[in-house]
Amino acid sequence: MSGKPLLIKRYASRRLYNTETSDYVTLEDIAGFIREGRDVQIVDLKSGDDLTRQYLLQIVADHESRGESVLPLDVLTDLVRSYTTQAHSIVPQFLAMSFDMLREGQSKVMESMSTPLVSMPGFDAMKAQQEAFMKAFTGGMGKSWSGPQMESEDKDEASPPSELDDIRKQLAAMQDQLSRMGKKP
Image 1: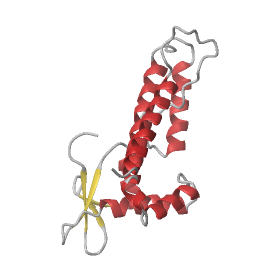
Image 2 (image 1 turned 90 degrees about the horizontal axis):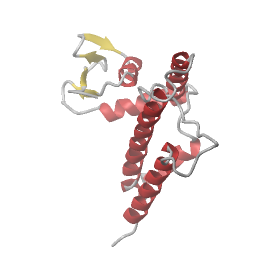
Image 3 (image 1 turned 120 degrees about the vertical axis):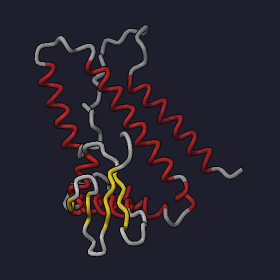
Image 4 (image 1 turned 180 degrees about the horizontal axis):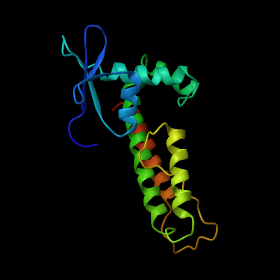
């Protein structure tokens, strides 16, 4: 995501105005910009208040209410609980690190998928189909996710660690960091 975020102004009438294209937009339009990889900033025209978080939460709520569930009920329950406990200081960092790991894993999988199998007949069609499936599955959350990497059953001991091993190590490091953050000095 490069440059400045797309500036959306909210008028007193609650209409949302795209300053880049000089037209009004809906929440679904804003969700589309984000799926395309754009950062957005939504600002109240009169007060100058940043309303981005409020509108992004509304987009998530709208998708969840239409049955496009991404967040399991127990995760939503834990999020609500985190607002009333000391966990509220750890949760944002945990979520940010989790999504960073997800994005990093996506790019590693794409790199590994594009190199070794390129010469295989039908690979491009298979890759495009897999990308379309993952885009639909994740709601376009990542621009280039192509799904999990399949591990070979005949791994030899001299082969480099798999992407899954890297992700496991990162998860273990993140869990260790979170447990240290939860302990008071």
